[in-house]
Length: 78
Image (cartoon, rainbow, N blue to C red):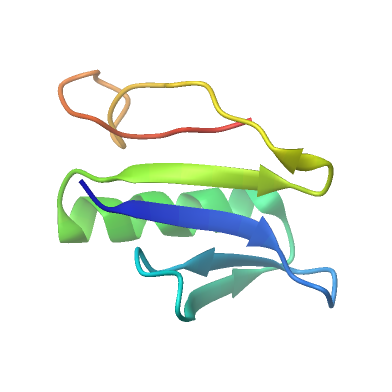
């Protein structure tokens, strides 16, 4: 299972990183907007996990599928 990541960029914006973590594929001014972008990418790419890294470190709690119905592995969030 591939893991997408949302993390704070040094410039203060939030970025969505590809599963390999090699590049940002989306950037947003808020964490909520970045998570929404990541969910859309997850739905397009298939069931994956999302790891949200806050400014104080990584916080994880399994929240079910990207669509919220619990049918597939999905969102890991703060």
